[in-house]
Length: 418
Ligand code: GUN
Ligand code: FE
Picture 1 (cartoon, rainbow, N blue to C red):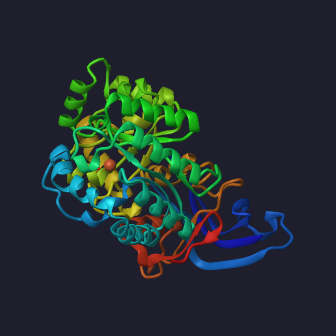
Picture 2 (cartoon, rainbow, N blue to C red; picture 1 turned 60 degrees about the vertical axis):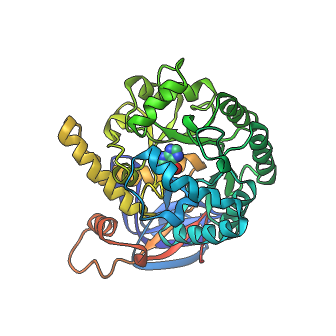
């Protein structure tokens, strides 16, 4: 039993922070067994006290959409929109991951950078390559960080080096599923058809079958860019919307599903997401960089869609999820100028990156009994030079802070030191 003491800030509800000054969190076997403002109220006789003093203790970050093999391209090459951007910069880089030594080099830097930025859980796209994807999963395991990692499946409209047969894709997926078979493992496979333009109907059918047979989550891209949506309409003329195309193949909430972007989702698509529990992953940096548009996050929330946040490296340029929160808030304010919708608030953005996203991993992203203890200790002493409230201190860290303010990182109760 460990008992952590610090100023606790977290979002049990979407709309408000719960703030416990000098609070206590008791943790046993990786899970929270008690949260209280007084030591005596924990009702726990013994336990080792770890006192973080005047520091903030917050849930660790979840990045629910990120492309590990695009890490080398981070912060460059954003002078095209999606489809030409993919062909010009992204696919040539991803093709390099046939070389496992190259993959190991890039992926180890990537995992370390997620850690540095306080992201303890992520949903990650790898490439089509089995062995490189396996190495990435092993790197997450060795780090002790949680990840859903997808071997990407694609078989059309892509360079030969990034196309494979349906049989090859199924065999590689089944091998990874067998290797990472512990349902409670921190690192798990996720079925990852890249997006409709990259996958033939037989590939999409195979992906749906794999997800259903193995009870695995699914991740892909949805309604990100106007030219992409027009292409999907041509490729799937029977579908009533982009989301319906996934739905026909069992890839839209039949198992837990993440759909990145949802910038142009129609009313019908939003209703389908809401009804089938599909989680929208808002990636504001990416939407700004490759000029996709602005996702109407308030509308998604109001209509009952689950929402999380993603860095979407390298369409997005930063792995820092606090920075991504700020972009989400800024984009939402711009949307509100046009639509009159209420902009996102800081607690809402924080909730998206913690408790909302965390539902995808079980009970993660909050400080409540039963939740896994994923946490960051924030030393904001250089930002805290006047009588700020604890909530203002967190706000200033979100807007002004960076990884240098993260003193400790915990995933499932273990301190992670890389
Ligand atoms: N749609 C299909 N592939 C990708 C990708 O790698 N990045 C983004 N932003 N969108 C995509
Ligand atoms: Fe993406």
